[in-house]
Image 1: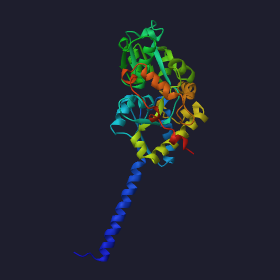
Image 2: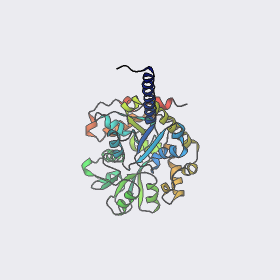
Image 3: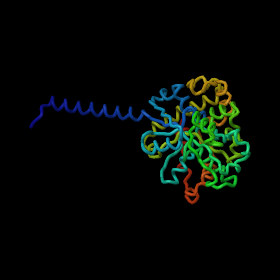
Image 4: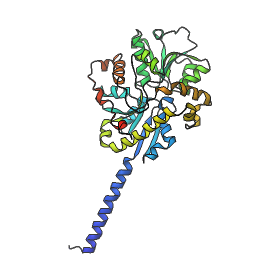
Length: 337
């Protein structure tokens, strides 16, 4: 069968149009990113919602969807399942997962201290130190979460075995508070604004404070990079342009945090994040704002501290050779103009 020249032109044009549309669709899909946040109302993960509020994602041509997941370990699972492209969570998962043969990396390092506090219920005045945790139920966001990692490390560091304590997954915010009020947990690790809420009502007191660099070094033995944007290494390699745009937006956000007051930052956050106490929210943010990096760069001494903490209690990691250089990258944040 012989085609007319006009028909051939039509077919060629249609093919070109389809290819162009496909390419356009590919670009659009690459710029659509879903990030899972391990509790975006927590002040430690504030950069995620702040970047959205300031319009920095849109400025980069990104369509970013933020999904909320109270426990970091569940956010990690969503990433590994391919349901999301990135997680706003603790860097320690990057090391823990490499020990399990999976490679993820921090591409923007938000903080250089955990921003976590070990609270003790005032119903239990017998708990005067971490060594007194023996036989107690301790609240964590989730089993396998960063709060669980830190709780286990502190217990072992203070002479306890992991069998001496019981980690109870209670999330954060209202669920954490309820668990402490009902004595389901006698102590627990949490962040702002939950800390302020419980201390203000006199229901809990602070035993271990890791909201500042100085206190973190005392508790953990060094700088402890925590909140970050981490992604699967293979995805990062295949989508460098998109990752660079995310880095641009987040570094700009970190600079905003470091050049604006806690009150100015709070004004950009959803009102329900204040939990009916904006003044308390602002005061807590003012105290903890120094935990955030100014440029998204991983602290030089941070990864070794995190590895030492994890190997301090994890039998599965003690004998593993971890390549720390594959758990983070500074390439994208250092390319931000």
